[in-house]
Length: 284
Image 1 (cartoon, rainbow, N blue to C red):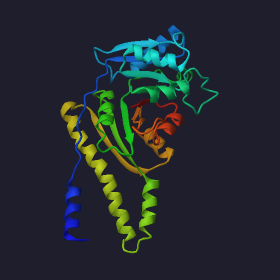
Image 2: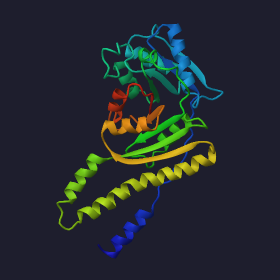
Image 3: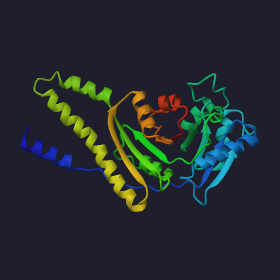
Image 4: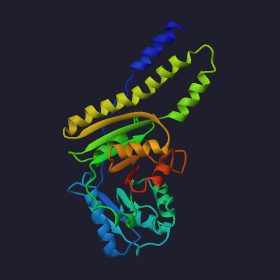
């Protein structure tokens, strides 16, 4: 390696992406169900309790019950007419959830991708009947495999966390991709495989860790009571994410679901939303 290459590497390594807090404006929240009006009001009351950390004095709540729409198009029209900033609904809307446990349902699928609005995905009311009464979400986790620079995700997750709650900023590095590149490196004689493994992994985990540290500093200035916890790890299986959620007693999971170059949910978002049916999720 030339001296110029060494200097460039040192210079790039010194770069540290810093968190920038974004304003999150949620003035109107729409709750959608396929239930009758009284049951819809009961479900909406539970959601309102759950979102105490997000609610402000000026927040307006609206509902759409099962008598107000049938088709996906009608639902999208109702959402548009509400001029809401957040839609709250549940998996398998207008579908028998217990017959199709590993699906979101066409209404939810289309709404999460056809609309730019964030969507709060709650457990189905059939499950909520057997669960304890909903309590305000206190442990909120933002999770991704590319947390560095994702100001929107972190800002939104922080906005959902009450002042006395805990915000977990979680970066899960893809172990499958890491192992694949290390396998290729192991076939290049001029590169020491073990040195490369340690150096690359250290760098991959350092950048999101540094970013979370900068986010912690910014959030502590604006919200001194908020507890921010850093979780940076290597993994890829759904079981790894499930373990993190269970270990940290997560009440609300916040994750990105949209890519500019595709319509379907990207990455691990869809299997997470399908598999973790009892975990409320905020899909951005």
